[in-house]
Each structure stands twice: as C-alpha cells, then as structure tokens.
Length: 392
Ligand code: CMC
Image 1: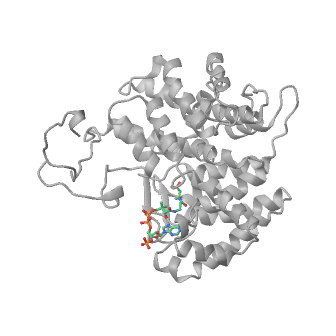
Image 2: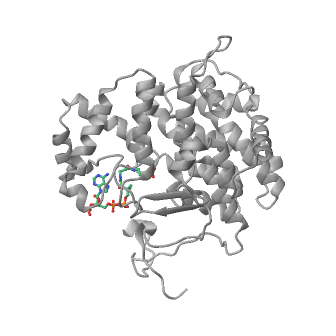
Image 3: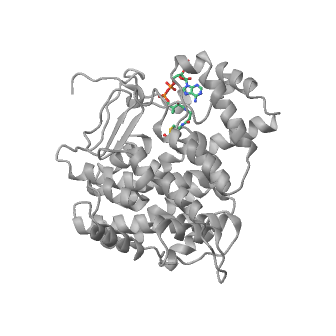
C-alpha cells in the first residue's frame, strides 16, 4: 500500500520468480529449464519436453515410458462430454469450443480438483495432456460435419491426434511420419514462453486457488486473441488478403506504416524479442522442408518471404526492432498439413498446454504466491450525491 507503480501492460513488472523458461530478448535466446530451444526442437519429443517443463529435468527411459503410458490411459472423452459438441453451432470457432470443453472437465472429474493435493494435480495433468488433442480433433470434426473417431492408444499423441482429425471410422489412416514429426516439433516450439498473456492468465486465475482445469480454460481464452495465439490465423488471413488485392507487398507495408485503420503486420513484433524470434527461425526452415516433403507449393509462402524481406529492410520496422515472431510462418505449415485456418490457434493451445501446467504448478507450490490482485490509479469522478431519476 502507499506507493503504487503504474505499468500498463506490465511491461516492466515481474509477477513471479520462475525456474522454467529463460528468454534473452535482445540476443534472441530461448531455453526451457536451461536447454536451448534449437536442441530440444532437434532432438526431443513433445512429451519428453512436456515432462522436462513440468518436472524440471529430462526424464530417464523409465520415467518417460511411465509418463507416456499415464497420458495414453486418459485419451478417451466421457460419452456425456461428447454431447457438448452437438450444442454448439456448426460454424462455431473451435477455440471457444475447446475452452468450454476444458472448463467442463471440472464437472466430470470432481475427484481431481484439489490444487494442494499432489495426487489430484498429477491426475488432472494426465487428463489434460491426454484429452486436449481429443477435444481439439472433435471440435474440428464437428466443424466439418464428420463423425468422431475414438482415440487409438497404440499410437503416440501426435499420430493419434492426426488420425482423429483427418481419419474416418472403419477406414485405415496412414500417419505420414514427416507430418507427425513436423507437428511434434511445432508443439515443442510452443510449449512454454514464460509470462505471456495466456500463461499470466493461468497463474492469475490459479492464484485464487481455482482448479487446474478452470485455470487452463481461462488460458485458452486468453490465447484466442489476435495479438497473442490468434495471430497465426490472422497472419494467414493477411497473406490471403494481400494475394486477393493483387499481391503488392510494398503497398501493404505502406498501409501498415501509415497505421491505416489499425493495420498491423501480423506475425511481426514481440514484447520481449527485439531480435529475430529464435522459434521463427526454426519454423521458417521447417516450412521449407515440410512443403517440399509434402510436395506442396504455396504462393502464400512466396508472399510471406517477400513481406519479411521488405519489412526487415524498412526503417519503420528496423527502428522499432520488429522481427518475425513464431506465428509468422507456422500457419503456412499447418495449411500444408491440411488444417483449416480456424484450427491454427487450437494447435498453439495443444503445444502451450505443458507450459501452462508447469507454470501453474510452480505458482501453487511457491510460498511467496499471493492472490493476484493488481492496483489501479483511480481517475473517475470525485464524491457526488445521488440524483433521483426524474431530476436528471
Ligand atoms: N506491425 C506494425 N507495427 C507494429 C507491430 C506490427 N506487428 N508491432 C508493433 N508495432 C509498432 C507499434 O505500433 C508501436 O509503434 P509506435 O511506437 O509508433 O506507436 C511500436 O511498434 C511498439 O509496439 P507496441 O504495440 O508498444 O508493442 P507491444 O510490446 O505492446 O506489443 C505485440 C507486442 C506482439 C502485441 C505487437 O508487436 C503486435 O501486435 N504484433 C502483431 C500481432 C502478433 O504477431 N502477435 C503474436 C506475438 S508472438 C506469439 C504470441 O504471443 O502468441
């Protein structure tokens, strides 16, 4: 109390201390638990990285096998939960469907809601990691009017997700290993990013001692915004818009610089990175490889590359230190894989989930955690007397 600091957007306020993710925004460095992101992207798997984020250390063979098995056991959705999907309009965006279904998990799994019980938190963790891909696939199936597929637990998490998304009941579905590997790598790149908007939301909601499902559901809603995870969808819509207008990249950049009707170069800029986002560098390379492996040419990739070159050579972007962020190239890969634009942010959510869980755990176990309760500078009216309605 007493002195209150005003810091819009919390640009200079640390809300916690954390051992999970290290970013040096000037040098373009990102590490999970000390391990450089490029090494994890190259050598690890999404579930191994999830274990690392949540438990703090890379697992032994036995620890990893047990972690994976525990997740595998929980991939099914309760049949009653499946009915939820029928209640949404068929043109619903899958992100609010995802957050609603995750919120509903706390009604189905009342046996794992105590934030201070290690047993409950572990069980909720397995349930979330296992069920989010199933919920995401069902949100997709609902949006295209196709039947749901039960999970096939002989498959790994990413393979299972691809099959439930693109497969059909009673038809064999061959998972393309290039595609599965590329998606697994993208999930690793998204797995944590310290105190971003959705993660701060998860921590803030959790600081009231709300359960893990409720906190993660709130995080999904924060991620949906176009300045955050929703940017991957916005980037693709921006590229399509440029193509539809004749493909003149220079004209678009001029619009951005003139701040015409709030037009932004989506997929550019970052609160912390004032250098090339290290994730974007890996994604860009991956986009080339995936498109080639899938035998796809995409004229939107050409537009994206031209747009990037144009922006990086322009004073407006140089002065403001605006570089491509993780969202700039991911959509092109998702598109080549066959995902509709509206599923892009859902894929981000699947990737970010272990980070949310790890950060929530750190928050709940940190003795210095207090309920998140920012202060304000009051600038409204001074005291005045109530006036009866007929006298106003
Ligand atoms: N296009 C054009 N101008 C920009 C952009 C952009 N993408 N980003 C920032 N600027 C300008 C901004 O207008 C401001 O200029 P001025 O000083 O003349 O007013 C200056 O750069 C500083 O920007 P800011 O808005 O104060 O920066 P911020 O740290 O508050 O916002 C951001 C960060 C990521 C929200 C913002 O850069 C942005 O809106 N980018 C586009 C959306 C996007 O790609 N989001 C994904 C972020 S990375 C992954 C994730 O979080 O999901």
